[in-house]
Length: 327
Ligand code: ADP
Image (cartoon, rainbow, N blue to C red; front, side):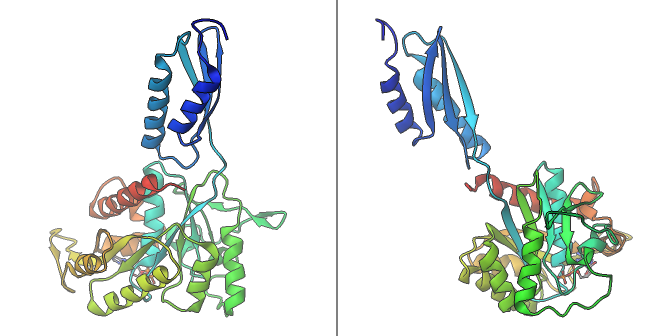
């Protein structure tokens, strides 16, 4: 070390303690300081903040004219967001499909798994009925839907309408094949769980350890009681709650657009508050949601309209949750 030059090993120690061990290997050559910063699991803003801190820390070092930071990142595993409901028919599959499409439109890299293996409906909702996934070395390759969301469903493996009489362990294995497929380029999987809160659901949750859960409910009290059970199911397995979505909340009149509330409104938001969980938003009951869903055109794929707006608002909240979450 010559006079007026930086003591690199002292600098390495200082940077390491500043970044909790993430910065390493500082080198100085002809005024250019290079170092490695491991940004695994940091959100975008946290990464930028750490980069700034490192730059500030080395700015005054003697002999340093310029800084170059090489960011490294460990390959991270897939994060699973489970979408559950206390009972069937509340729009859990509709929400899963549209959440996946809306998150993709917001720039997230999501895939969709239809774990509702007893009544798979994602191929119809996403317009990919009749397609068959290929496999390489027994690993399935997801089907790319027209909406830019790669997906897999038991519905792609069996004929439409064919009854599936899976027993618990078989159901678990079938789901594992879908989750362990080649999800290249995807970092978050939206998993549409079977409705209800039985042992099959619990073992699926325990095996695949979702990063978080979204619960869908309709405004009726009965559905909310069921939703409470769904929340307990995730809590029992230690899965963090992302929040509650209220579906079929108010009827949007197709001719005048006015929203009326045949089932009452605000019940789900109130229930979410009482359970201490975030409320992610409400989706109105509209003809368009049912007809578009039946036609394989998720309303979230549209650019405007009450339906697309409602799904986008929910996806934004889920996106915020994802960004804040360190893997
Ligand atoms: P689940 O997955 O909870 O069983 P689905 O998503 O299959 O429920 O929805 C059940 C039925 O209700 C489907 O026909 C769907 O098109 C319809 N549906 C769901 N949400 C809405 C909504 N907000 N407005 C109108 N129809 C809806």
